[in-house]
Amino acid sequence: MSFFRYFALFAVLASTSSFADESLTIAVASNFQVTAKEIAAEFTAVTQIPTRISAGSTGKLYAQIINGAPFDVFLSADAARPKLLEENGLAVKGSRVTYATGALILWSADSELENQDCLAALKSGSYRWLAIANPLTAPYGSAAKEFLEAVGVFEKIESRIVYGENISQTLQFVVTGNATLGLIALSQVKGGLPVDASCSWNVPSTMHTAIEQQAVLLASSDNADAARRFMTFLQSAQVTTLLERRGYTVPE
Amino acid sequence: MMDFGPLWLSAQLASVTTAILILLGAPLAWWLSQTRSRMQPVVQAIVAMPIVLPPTVLGFYLLIVLGPNGAIGSWWVKLTGDTLTFSFTGLVIASCIYSLPFAVQPMQNAFESLSKKNLEAAWTLGASKLDAFFSVAVPLSVRGFISAIVLAFAHTLGEFGVVLMVGGNIPGETRVVSIAIYDHVETLNYAAAHQLSLALIAFAFVTLFSMFLINRRWQSR
Image (cartoon, rainbow over all chains, first blue to last red; front, top):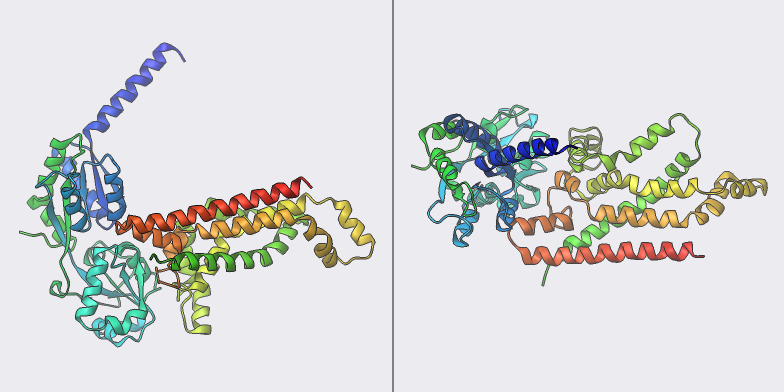
């Protein structure tokens, strides 16, 4: 390769890397991935700042962040991990906000439950499997467990519970008919599902700890100005409308 | 004290899977090594597929096929009243498919490298084909069998993606060691994750080391 070709290659690489520096890398909890992409697209349309989404489970992203992953903003599925990051000095102090609060829905695609009372079916225990997200790892899972305890059936049906690794997998178990019933996220239903519900029941938010999803600005961000603009945009009326349409509630 | 239950469950799953794969895989490997059928490359390709396909693809289709509405799953529900997904039996079926090439290929390679003369000698001496298989082919292919056993066992032990998709994380039933480690990492319980991981690393090393050692001994004879 001639010198000029090397030079041209170098110029191209240099320009793409400077482009990458300007773009914002957003770490997003998998369950929020689809909505986050919509928000990021609207953000880019308004600000001309390009964004990249890196999706994973909250625990995995947390492990990546404490090991130096190059993210600017972290949209967590819970409040615990952002709080830890803030305490450890890995997130900018005072940047932590609840950007959305999730809701649970009891849902089934089982034809035998067509037009039946979903809650009564849950309590009856006359099914093989109820899918919930893992209460240890997923906020939707711990909320589901609290709800089952609140209605007093957890001990009765514990042997019928199958655990999804996250809320997406929990949905998969119900949609494919492997589990008769599932406690899934309202946002998943609003996002559109491949099969129709035979019955569903909205779990009142008073029956479990609020599923708060928090965001933080990461201290290691080399693009803090753009990241701050994103955090502000995240709390704008435009995003609030989008989130409510997606089945989330947004704190005042 | 830490919970080694998942490690024990994984060891059970890997043992059962390996036993089934050797029993069913040996005749298949023998057929693949001896046949002149035009179907041979087709079967060979199907056997090798789990090496190429990501566990998510296998897991996704197993979730459908083994599910209560699936071809195998619905039949199983009628027979036993229970679902195949989220059960140890379901994991055994999934693991047999997932680890199939790791058992079949070493045995097939060993059978292919057998000298035709030995078998012909056995036939000439009046041994039936089955007799010749057990008294000539199998003893001469011990190294292939050892490789098949170790690889199928180790590969099943390290299984994660497929189990994640069809297992459902039930303690004592489907929460195998890789899933338990994943959960510990997710819940920031890094100490427990380290303990199980180190146990697995030590086990993997000892297993592979023993295999290579045995293979070397055999070679030098």
